[in-house]
Length: 291
Length: 333
View (cartoon, rainbow over the protein chains, first blue to last red):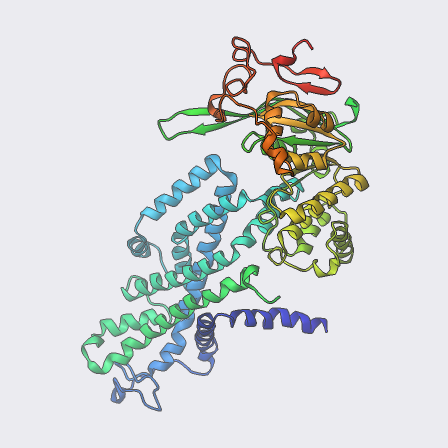
């Protein structure tokens, strides 16, 4: 009975809340599909590395759902195997930048004074530097041999805008009467930050995390596509770069090679952004009607 | 009486700095000036005055949310800003506040159970969820939210204004306080609900022997809630008159108190029409940034004495026992 209740509150209730917003629910389904395809798919569809000169640039068929590339390799298998790294890097970078933003933003607002001034000064400097050129230059100096390193660099540059937004929110929530009441009840600083202030911003933070992920996707795919990051493994960004550099865009037959990774990326981005609509309803009790 | 004082304010003052732009420099705005008061165990003191006169600041100073610029706040004879950690913590538990706006005083993300049980767990009053539930139900029953089972797992947005205010009152009771600052606690409520909440506060005072600082702009509410207690009239951050409620209401002495009382409409419109409002010399309240010299009420006072009221600052005079007035008309009486 008890286990049934726990299962219900972990799986069923969020699903009901997600399904309340139609667009958000569609975003959720597409996102889930892409995640399953990218993380479970590779166990079923092996990456096709065999060069088959007689099958160059084939159109979609039963054998090759998305056709073949300039060396006759199956494109669908490349799509299935190329998502994992992109998503992992995006997730890590998003988590890193959101964590930094939440920590520094709330610290800045809560501490005030000199701490606030120093943090905001650094924030504004990083905001002023154009992100992508800096990433491009950095990637020339730092050996980006693994996805984690790439995520770290993208994450370390992505936090300032969110930090400022978080600071503004904490400044506003900090003055509410229920925070005063918590102070008078001597509930402690940690309780006030983590149990009174942050839950009020949770939907905003999670939505920002997803937005940070989507911008991390563009940053990394952009770097890979421009060939600024050394090749590792196989991913959607690399597919675009290969399709591009092998002159694929000159052949009509190559349309599926170049469009497949682009559509995969666009679909991932769109579903993630649309999914955030549902999240608002999950974290904001005022929107949960009928309880 | 003095030794039973639970809270005593000694020459308290509070100024805020107002900055006007990069080149504007700073100005000091005195919100509270030289405030001395004492409130005994179980007593009701009503603090009345116009909006912006410093009532809420006084309340926040007493519960220790803001620090005074000068002067002392004594809790059981000890300065709260010069206390050991343990003493300050016991002061914090003993002195609570009920806010004006029940829509912003409850955190929207928490259920009533969480709102009321957090302080109980934090201060070790309950140890388990079962104990906490029992205690929360008891608190809800105490503030007339019955049946309590219907309310315990609701969110604040599912309650009405009056119900929320009762939850806020229940929260102020979680730590068995001895002193509650009720900052306009009923003024946002519907008139029909106001009286029942006042009745609730009065009953809690009787049952738990809690002292109240009842801050209000509504003299009728002060009269109703604080008839057995005292009333203090505040004008521009200073107390101008203080005394037992019946005597202040029936025999208002300070010109400002008189003006306030005359401005209250009576239930009978004929009486209201026949009441002659006092002719004030000016209807504008002076700016806190630029307080008038001498008695701060002198630019508006119809009884002002030139060369006295605008030069000297009046002290507290005691024309009758326990009834103090800060006005030169009562000097030497």
